[in-house]
Amino acid sequence: MRHVRIFDTTLRDGEQAAGGALTIDEKLEIGRQLARLKVDVIEAGFPFTSPGDFKAVELLSRELKGVEVAALSGFKREQIDATWEALSGAERPLLHIVISTSDIHLEHQLRERRESVIDMTREAVTYVRDKTDHIEFSAMDATRSDIGFVADVFSAAIEAGASIVNFPDTVGYAQPEEFGLMVRQIVEQTQGIEDVVLSVHCHDDLGQAVSNSLAAISEGAAQVECTINGVGERAGNAALEEIVMALRTRGDYFKADTRLSSVELARTSRLVSNYMGMVVPPNKAVIGSNAFAHASGLHQDGMLKERTTYEIMDPADVGVEESSIVLGKTSGRHAFRDKLERMGLELGETEFSNAFNAFKEIADRKKTITDRDLEAIIQNEQHRAFHQTFELVHVQVSTGTGSMPTATVKLRSDDGVEHSDASIGTGPVDAVYQAINRVVNVPNRLTEFSVSSVTEGIDAIGEVTIRIESDAKVFSGHGADTDILVASAQAYINALNRLLAGLGKEWTATLESNAAAAAVELSGV
Image 1 (cartoon, rainbow, N blue to C red):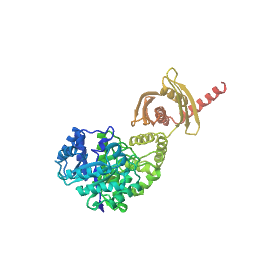
Image 2 (image 1 turned 90 degrees about the vertical axis):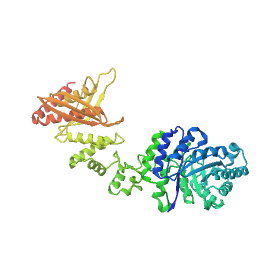
Image 3 (image 1 turned 135 degrees about the vertical axis):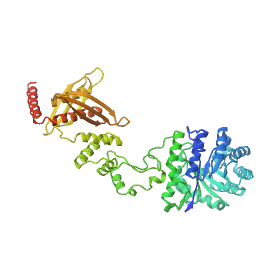
Image 4 (image 1 turned 180 degrees about the vertical axis):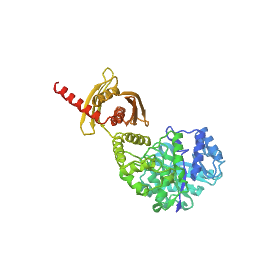
């Protein structure tokens, strides 16, 4: 395996992301974490640009051990002097010089001719060589430059003493095949390239930063410059975690690897995200919250049988505790049963089928089912474990400011007959209960009503627990649903079923009598 150096520029180029500024203390903590991650180089800042960057580079150079510390500089002597002053305390300092090489930059930014750029390159590297022998030279906007000219500039830098030459796609313009060809041409045309490290630095303006970096590695690049989470100027940089895990996962293809301790990736990602205030998208490769989450029923079934059916990386390798089976509307019975077993919930086949059906109904209305949701569903089913005299088929409520709360309910009795009725109430729940009472017609008094949210969010499951009293006996009921009125109706039906279970045939005769009376009343309307 060929070793590829990881040059992390999160603290320099990454911090240039709009709104991503870091304090010195935050930079130091991230720097220490990057050292634990075992990156080869940490670019700590651009000392000449501000006193804050100077102090940060000076502090990190002094504090970070076991890692190369780099700092960026322009090509002018006063810039180089300031950079070296901040950087010189590092165990292994790397002074990084940059000069533009594209014609558009030469005309509008430097206002210099190509010949002058070669002279400035030679002079700047020679000047740095008196301070250190560890020098990186970058050709800014290299991918929009004449490749022959970049090779000439690199040749001059190497001759003057550069130990690393960096070929950046500064504006994210290149495409992978094209970028790979450019790197190959640089290797073929640059004098002395075999004696130094060839580096690349890719931006993500067209979404190709990681692909371009990997294409360059395939063509011989020995260092990639990247950032945690891909943060950086405009659309960002190549994402470090994606490059590292692509090489490690596809070593058979790239025949290259890094020395990184990949188990630190997730922690490093969270640290950078928190300090920079930039949320990592759930679908972000390698370290997104969905990277090892499986929601498809087909995928969940495969995962439960053999993890590698749908995972090419072990989550533990990037510092994620384990894969997650996310229960939702596409989940199957296998995933549902496995989840219940992991939660220590054992159900008989009938209870399981009822619970699975209830889960499916909830999942159609709720994106993600949490453990607390499942507990509520199971508890709801366990409350239904006795004989169900009535089942809630339909409930509809009309309410609002200036109107009288009205509820219509439809219940199905255990003989398959459906019973409907409506009522008004002091509020929507009272209207529902009054309508149910008109169907069931069993004297009782509501003594307790409690409602709570199982989880956060607008689609949270609501739990309702009630107690009713009849003939000095208390019966409890429980309901759970994303619609709190439905949960309230379920809880009341649940309590009434408990009450009716003790009344038996006496109540059945009363129900038949009431139904007959209602039919006579309707026929006379």
